[in-house]
Image (cartoon, rainbow, N blue to C red):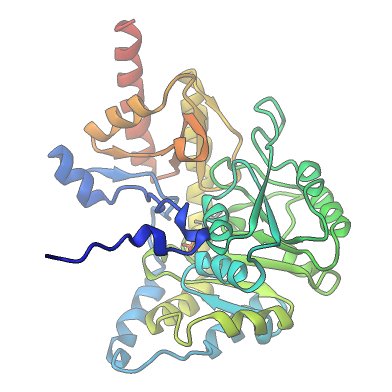
Length: 380
Ligand SMILES: *Cc1c(COP(=O)(O)O)cnc(C)c1O
């Protein structure tokens, strides 16, 4: 007879309570499940234009080198990123997505007996990363739905949870899933106000989409605040989500510590090449930004016309309050081949997060919602 093993009993305490991250469904899976084709995915905040053609060419050029390990130091990419951010290469840490950077930070600085602070409706990976280490998670209540930054970060509430045991505060700016943001003055006041040995992680995954005054790109503050860590990604505006590459900008001493916990070859060679090329293709970035700005305006206005409450967003997605349970809308959209993101796992069962697509995709979403909404209303 086979042995019985209770693996649950063997897990370390931090991991025991974890639930696996549920990603947006891949297109292929939805098409199989619903027997449809020609579907569109507006669920994972990807760039609808895809990667820069120059990044794709760099990947093709790199295929011959796949027999060799990648550059474990990411030399060329770090040099380029340092120049891009007016800093030094040893301030950069490369990650297998910025998700890995967040996990490395937690691994290096968190554990039982210390605490981390994040906002109620912030990026779900903070919760997962903190919980796995066994550190205490202190969750600050978000701003109200009526605030100018609805459901956004309340930095005063976050500050009040910081004490001598707090090793990390996670701030997403702009935030996912809300699309809200913190302005320069409030963020600077927050960073000045926390103890110097509390690390403030500012996750700028969508920074390249933000235009306009008052939005801070805080890597420029590092000389003043060595406890700041900025994370960035190639998954969003750069359109390289499938390759998994992101990075941190930090004090070199923090980078050196992250270097101790990361795997020696955590970022693959094609990702490094593609990122380097993508960084230099400013025309593609500009186009991506402008397609997004137009689509964001079009979607927000269209959704508001349909009577839904759309939260103001500076990212490449909008959070929409459906006014009632969002799951049936999600399901009805799936039936016509449109994948959007339910956010019940964030504690927002009445909201949907919708990524900005290409113009025709945005129109298709609005048309489908109009049809569904009409049907729902006439059904009573
Ligand atoms: C998408 C996203 C990331 C990026 O994740 P990667 O691991 O770099 O793909 C990080 N933070 C937030 C808030 C995001 O929405």
